Length: 426
Image (tube, rainbow, N blue to C red; front, side, top):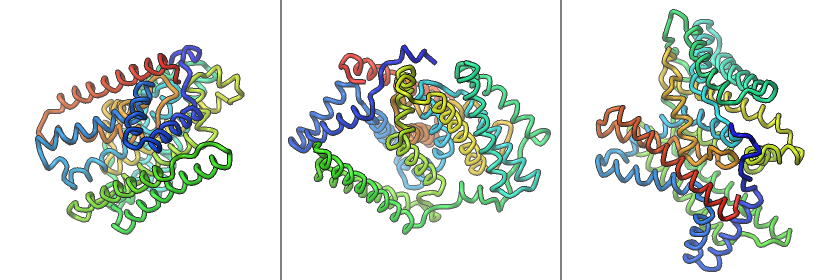
């Protein structure tokens, strides 16, 4: 998008950790006053994190609950989580490409085209599901690699080649489906079952909650140990334990409440897969060299290149992953809808995925964001859609409301960027 030399320096992982440590010391030393002071410090520095999107999600829930209490019923929340997952997987790829300060406008079309590849391979060519899904996801990866070549070798801006891809892969979708127009997945398809009918048992769900809590606690205890060994101030043990307890309680209640839905519905396999992908990508961005390099390239490409980072490889990996996630999301969406048609991966899917990443807190300027932006952003958008449907509001209003929410998210990103610049952070 913009030239790398014009990008503002990004807040590095090291400086982010230092800020977190300073906040934890305030909390440890001053208790509630420390919490408030840490919050004020972060706001002044433009480090809003996921606070605005969580606040927005709470406001949305309150407003729709006041209009129609069934909005927060367990059945309604199960529906929201299930329908958020496929497009959320696509949005996860958008988060990655936005971290580089680039854009991919074709993810919806890629999702539709690759789902058609899967359907034709499965139904028309009578191949096993694993082969059909492999063909679809492999096609998505190939598209991403072609995009990387166009960007790094030919020098075509991402806006241009992805806009061309948006049009080209819509045409490829129509060509692949041919005269059939619509392909219905078999009734006994494992993909249909996974996306629509499979839900975690209570034992499985609570086991995942325990694993998540113990993993978080273990990681934080390891951080405390390493910082002590290095002679640095460690996080407060009491605060770490308190957050672990809050995490366990929150996730446990979430599982319990969804489990109250009728027909043995609760936490779906589909939503679980989405959350696991978000966690894996988050860990990759925060804990691996590759993730730190993605952030560095997104913050200042030229500085990253001079520091020895293989910038071309970063672009190849990110564009490849973006299209791969688009393909996987398209396949999951096909399983959920049970069909692939000429409208698969239309503009609605494309723009929803991009809007989710931005609304979730990923900066359009590169170098700032988190994998959880895809999860939170999709929950916001799906909550708006479900709420407006419950109170019988027409789709035209839904699009206008979604556009307004997106505008607010971009405005918040712009304001926080200026605050970081004026405060000298980032």
